[in-house]
Amino acid sequence: MSDQHEYDGIKYREEKSSPGVFRILFAVLVIWAVAYMGYYLFSGWSSQAEADAAKKDRESQKQVAHKSVETTATVSGSGEHKIELYVAAGKKLYGSLCAACHGESAKGGVGPDLTVSKYKYGKSRLDITKTITEGRPGGMPSFSSQIDKEQVEGLVEFVLTLK
Image 1 (cartoon, rainbow, N blue to C red):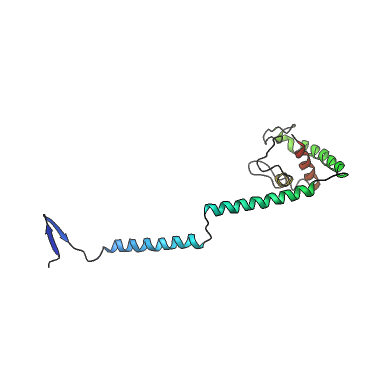
Image 2: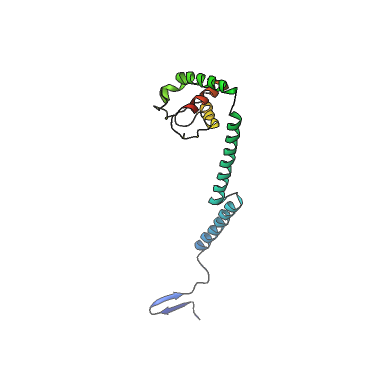
């Protein structure tokens, strides 16, 4: 039997193997697919549901930490006088450090309004302390090098009294 056949004027030649370029491209594709699957299966990759569950777990741990800090920070009885002193000192410090950006009445200016019920980064003692000491992106500077822990507590108490 000959290698070439002719059907309706079209010459047909039966190939015994595919062209070398196609075999090379197929081999590269198979190697890439195995490497890709291996990377995602064995590199710690997780599904969106697993990522959401991990995020929810971190948030719940954060809330527990916040509540424990707030319960230890809550003072009763003779501590009321100390809180009033902190608020007074915080108000004075607010006037010198914070009023330029947040306004004299804390209603906002360059910085955000501090009299709202929710803050972008949280309104708990821990969140406000972190904001004051570490600063926040977008304009809030860190004051950890300028004021001590008692002054930070005073500012936190004052900010928490704002309504």
